[in-house]
Length: 80
Image (cartoon, rainbow, N blue to C red):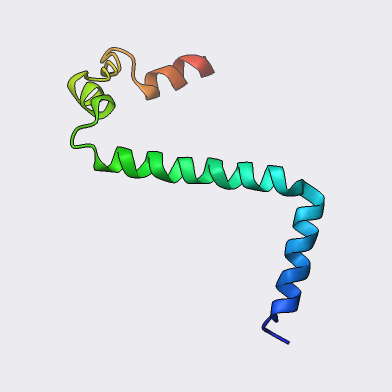
């Protein structure tokens, strides 16, 4: 009961083909293959220009809070 026979898989395949049609399934598999090829091509590249560009430019920094206003002073002035 835990495993499916070949007939179960044949019925599932038939239902998928009836619902989506053979054209959509072949297009989907073609797009999937193109994605894998593109992934392999990008993994084979020695240097990635987008990674180098982001590494050269610093993202910036946030200024530290002003020393004259602290959290305790702000709370005290709000109560008064």
